[in-house]
Figure 1 (cartoon, helix red, strand yellow):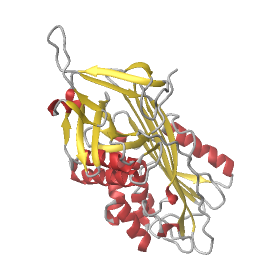
Figure 2 (tube, one colour; figure 1 turned 30 degrees about the vertical axis):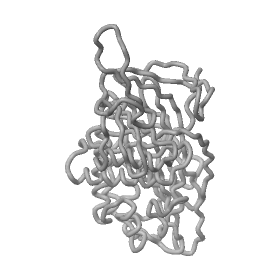
Figure 3 (tube, one colour; figure 1 turned 120 degrees about the vertical axis):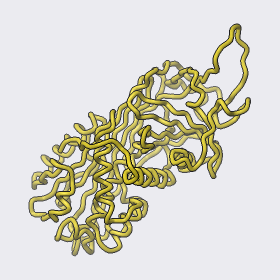
Figure 4 (cartoon, one colour; figure 1 turned 180 degrees about the horizontal axis):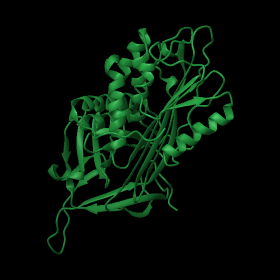
Length: 403
């Protein structure tokens, strides 16, 4: 079950899929609270493959979640997986494991990438170790374990893995930052600073909920990280949603070189300074390093992911996948993101585990996520530059301490 290979993101078909994935990112952001990181690009292909094999209300809900007709979902998922596999700096993989006794529809199974299908045995500890090893290997060690745990009711696991890495052509300078105001006042933080002449790297946009300052930090392999700082009253979803809208060119970002003097946006100031000799315009950026992780139970928000009906184990919902009745028993994602002086790394593993449907009770599990909240958070989007596909999104509330 190796990395999915394919061609670059291009064409209207994949372009429509990019829009659908980015819309799912924005819808998730509307529900985000506290420090967190999430990859809609890891969730979307799984939902699309499930939609292809679903029926009835489950099929309609999954199609609505992926933003495409169900009969187009599997093709779009394969195109996206192939495109992800071709992006420099990004590893993408899909895995499927089933119990031997679970029959699969041949037309659904053969639509998956080659070398994807493995077997689940009755040896649950050994099976869990194998799934954990797959997650760690496919994410370069960023995610050490599969987000779901095997038990006797898991008859199938469908998982995706993403790992991205980009390095800054010009590293940041590391320094101590100790703000004298705001929520981080007096704290010793791992600061990052860089100056340059590209004023278009920073800009300001006005979304429906307020002003957002955007800073683009370009990576050397076509993956950029967009830092987004909104007005203090704005929620994470409003700030991140504005960033997604800017990617879709639904709102305009005015480069800092075209803005007037003064405080022109959140955290963005333009002023004139005296100097001894003629100097070109300069963009000076100060931010903080972060290293964050999050775990999401998709069944805590089943409506967002089109899984409400599919969770009902009183019936089967995926006749296009297997003649055996199946319902969704578990669906979770683990994600990490690291932003530092030299570059950016992120990883995500998403897994769904159908359980037998019919007479069995609903055995879905939930997890509790504890988050830290700060008064002045900021968002980020890790973006494939050419296609504008959001690979990872997050909300930073806890910067790294200065060492």
